[in-house]
Image (cartoon, helix red, strand yellow):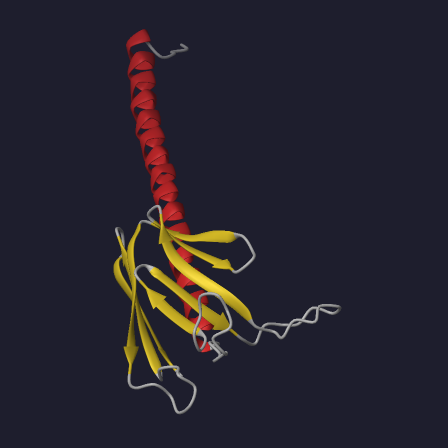
Length: 168
C-alpha cells in the first residue's frame, strides 16, 4: 500500500520552511546593514588618516622665505582656524621655472577642514571639523624664524580632538 503525506503534514513542513526562510532573510539583511556601517566608518577613518598624513607632510616641509608672499612671513602664518605655510620640496615640472615651493593653506570652512594652494582650487579634506589650532613648541629656530616644533589640534564632532605633533 502506498502512503503519501497528508495535507496537515505538508502544511506543517511549509510553515517550518517559511519560518526558516524569514530567519535567513533577517540575518542576511543584518549582515548588509553592518557592512554599510563598516564601509562608512572605514571611509571616514581613511579621510582622517589622509588628512593627518598630509598635515604632517606639509608641516615637515615648511621652508623659511622672505616676507614677500602675501600671507606668509618666514614661511608660516597662524590664525584663528587658518594656517598658511610655504611648503618646499615640491617636484619641479619640466618647462616650469618655479622654485619647488608653494603657499599652502589649511582652514575650517563650513564645518569642514579645507586644504588649498595659493592660485589653485581648495579641496575639502575632513567633514565635521569645529576648530583648528596650532601651538608652537620651543623657541624660534636659529636664524630661520620657524619654531622647532608644532602641535596641531583638529576638533572634530565624531573623533574628538586629533593631535599632530611635528618636530623639525
